[in-house]
Amino acid sequence: MDLTTLTLLETRDLLASGQTSASDVTQAYLDRIAHLDDKIGAYLRVNPHAAAEAAAAKTGTLAGLPIAYKDCYCTAGIETTAASKILSGYVPPHDAVSVARLKAAGAVTLGKTNTDEFTMGGSTENSAFQLTKNPWDVTRVPGGSSGGSAAAVAADLCVAAMGTDTGGSIRQPASFCNIVGLKLTYGRIPRSGVIAMASSLDTVGVLTKRVADAAAMLQILAGHDVTDATSGQTEVLDYTAALADGVAGKRIGIPKEYFSEALDAKVAAVIRAGIEKLRELGAEIVDVSLPHTAYAVPAYYLIVASEVSANMARYDGLRFGPAGSGENLIETYFDARTRGFGAEVKRRIMLGTFALSAGYADAYYKKALRVRTLIKQDFEKAFAQVDLLAAPVAPSTAWKIGEKINDPLQMYLEDIFTTPVSLAGMPAISVPAGFVEGLPVGLQIVGPQWGEPQILAAAHAYEQATEWHLAKPVIQ
Amino acid sequence: MQISIEEVRKIAKLARLHLTPAEEEMYAQQLSDIVGYVEKLNELDTTNVPETNQVTGLTNALRADEVRPFGHEAALIATSQNPLRDGQIQVKKSI
Image 1 (spheres, rainbow over the protein chains, first blue to last red):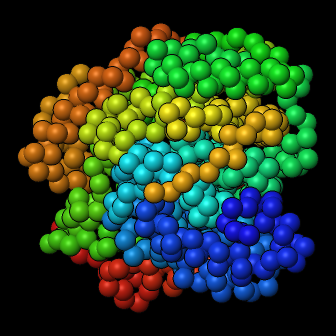
Image 2: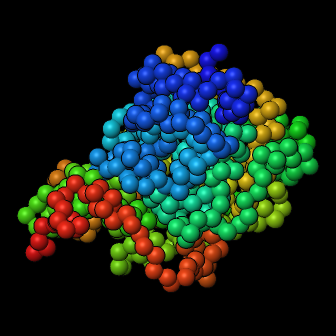
C-alpha cells in the first residue's frame, strides 16, 4: 500500500494499530519527494533530520505524522527564509508556537515549503528562489501565497501542511489544488514565530487532504499564548466532535455581490451546484447582501501595504540574513534591503510608506480603516440573519505561470472573494467542489467569529456527500 | 493621483531602498495605477465611521511586570551574519 495516499486520520489509525511505523510513513513521503518534487517544486528544503525524528519514540495525537511548513514558520535549527534573499542563511533558534505545539503532539517536520516572498502574492511566483507548479497542470500556478504547501498536500508530498492566510493565501491555493484549506478566526492560533506580513490580518492555518484532518490539527493548534497579544482567550472547543453536527437546519446565506461579472461563469456553475448540495443536505439557503464587497480589495491592499512597510523595517542586514555592506550604517541598510527584497515586497513597502506619510495618511490609510469597519459590519449584520455563508473562493481557476505576473493590480483583483472575510477577521474554509476544464474549484464556507465548529461541520457534511476530494492529480 | 518620479525617490529614501532610473519609472507607473485604483474608497461616505485597527475585541493584553530571565541571548545573537564582539553585533558607524 502506498502510505502517501492516506489521509492524516487514516495514517494515524494505521500507526495506532501497529500496521505501520512512523519511520515507514516518513520514509514513504521522503521517497516520494525525492522522486517527484523536481516536477512540482513544492519544497524549498527538506528536513535532513526527518527520518531521525520519525525514528525517535513519539507520543501525542499527531505522533509520527509528517507535516510540511510554509517557509514563514520559524523552525528551530532549520533555515527559514520566507522565500526571500534577505533571510538567506537565517536559522531560527526557536520554533514558532504553532510548530512547538505540533511537535509536542508528536508531529515530524518534513520540510519547508515555497511561498511568495514574505507571503506577498497570490501565485507563489514572487518566491525569490523557485517556481512551484500546480500538480493538476504543471504549466499553471498552484495559487498563493501558500502554493508550496497546497501543492505538497495535493501531490501527496506530506500528510498535511501549515500555511498562512492574510487575504486568501490558504483558501485560494487550496481551491486551485483540490484540497482543504482552513483559515481560522483572527487570533484563534497564536502567530508567535510566524514571520509577519500584515499583523492585523495574518492568520495561521492548515492545508489538508480532508476536513476531518483539519479539525484534528486545529485541536492541537488552537488556544491562547502569552507571547501573542492578539491571540484569543476564547475557549478551545472539540472540533472533531463538532463535525457530526452536519449542516441540516442551518441557514446559509449566499452573498449576492459575489456573483458579479468578475466571477467566471463556469466557476459560478460549480459553486451553485455546491450550494444546491448544501440544500439537499438540509440547509436553508437564503440570499444575503454584503454591500461593501467591492471596496474590500482597495481597503485590504492599503492596510496590508501600510502594515508591510512597518513589518519589513526590521530587515536591516544586521540581525538576520546576509550582512549589508557600505561606508556607514545607513548605507548598509540601503544595501541589504535593495539587494535582499524582490519587486513585490518593494512595491508594497513603497505603497505603504506613501499611504502612511504625513499629508496622505488620512486620505488613504485611515480611510481604509474606516472602510474596514463598514465591511466588518456587513458580516455582523449577515450573521444576525444566517449561521454561515457560502461563496466562491476565487473568480477563476488556476492561471498559467507568467500570465499575471507583470500586472500587480490584476493580481490583487483575484482576491475579491477572500479579502472581505480577512478584513472582518472571520473563519472560512475552502473545500473541493468540482472542476472546470480539469482544474479544481473550491467552495468557500464562512462563519462568524470563533465559528470554526460550524464551518468544519458544514464542510465535512458537504465533502462526505460528494467525491471531488477523492480525485488525485496525475503528475506529468 | 499620479505618483511622480520625485515622489517615488522620496518614498524610496524613507524605505531605505536604492532604485535604478528604470525602476523609478516602473514603480512610479505601478504605484500610480494602484493608488488610482484604491481611490475607489472615496465613493464611500465614511463620516462618523470609526476606524478598525484590529478585530479581536481585545484591549491591553497585559502581563505582570516581573523580570524573567531569558537565557537565549547567545543563540539570538548567533543568527547575525555580521561580526560579533562581546555578545554584541558590530555595525558600521552611523555618520
